[in-house]
Image 1 (spheres, rainbow, N blue to C red):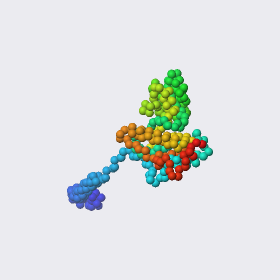
Image 2 (cartoon, helix red, strand yellow):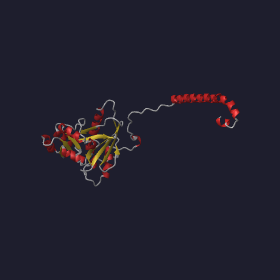
Image 3 (cartoon, rainbow, N blue to C red):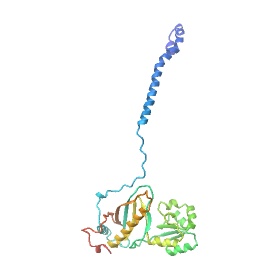
Image 4 (cartoon, rainbow, N blue to C red):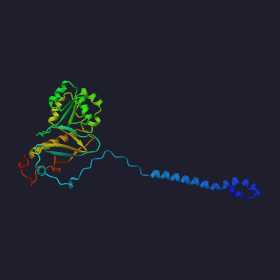
Length: 301
């Protein structure tokens, strides 16, 4: 209005100036009412959209580990699996190469894991290297060394672990050295390896010497990613010896699973037999098949 009125004569501007505000108001009124109506419609539509918008799915609980479908997998009787594995181990030292069992569990990703120790009917003769953390100069140190522990003491153990020298398979601690262990801050190193002593795992004990003897004579196992891996026999074992050790292992793991919280369900899904240098073969639960060789040919050298 100001630009167009500047082109008019002075007399005409004086006549039109009182009408300026009223003309602007009349001109803007329909536009403003239409604008407000559009805003109200947009807000209503937005509310309806948010109301009808599908809600995000809530995160489900712990998911189970995926396992292969056994219907589409070739499985073998124990004697057949031993025959194939021995063929892969030709030329290997029977007392060094060992049969290993891989027990796959049907379980959820979160929650407690199975870990324990067992003694086989037929000893595998796996020499475990045990570390003992106990007060230096105490009777526990002398007894632990006499029982066969490879590393004993406090500061000596702490320094070795911090320097990356971990030459032991199990680690136990006397209650009197537990505070020193916690102050040393070895949990970040020993924890991921499953070597950190704790009361829950039975590796913080008063009688360290007897515990060393037990650990050296037994086999310690732990569930990792829904799999428990255990050496169950030497390559020279007979099928009957391997069967006895396998039965003992499965029975013990079933007990471990039953001893967990009632809300935690763990089941054995698959059993795989392998060796130190051989492949893994899924077992079907049978001892022999119609094509199995004589058991006498599957034992010894």
